[in-house]
Length: 48
Image (tube, rainbow, N blue to C red):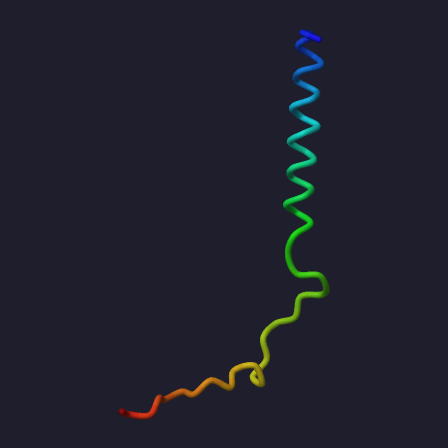
């Protein structure tokens, strides 16, 4: 098992699997740009 080709291919396979697992994270669905309705936060804050 000290074959350098085997070691290199194992490292490449593990790197691809890690990359695919990280790429699977994130938003599930179509990306939508923010609308004006989503900006309901107050523009000015009350004075204390």
